[in-house]
Image (cartoon, rainbow, N blue to C red):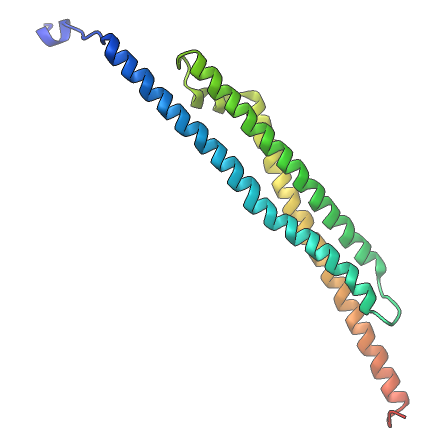
Length: 183
């Protein structure tokens, strides 16, 4: 049995359709702004920290050479540390480019969804878009590599510094044993 409420389907009025479209447009604009904020914030803060850390330790490692007045031990550790810091900085630049390309592609998809009066919701198109998926994958790999290069660079720098400090202490001990009166 069909009741009277079920047989009478309500057809939305033009005002309701216009209100729904206006609501969807406001929602789309808010998500567009949210994407922009995410792009700006994550692209700025985290990347800035990693960039400062890698360049700062790179410059700090260069200053080690000036303080070493004795023979440098294991110089290849310092060279490898510089290589890893350079790779971290280069990876950071790639990460910035990929992040920008992904955000630009998402903004294009949101605008296309707006133009088509939201026939396909932009969340569906941005989640299923092959370019966005590719940028996410490249960005994830880039982030992992940047952190690995940074850790390797710091590790090699610490090994270099420790080996040279220990070598300097050994040389000072040998000199003091040869001349116990410091004359």
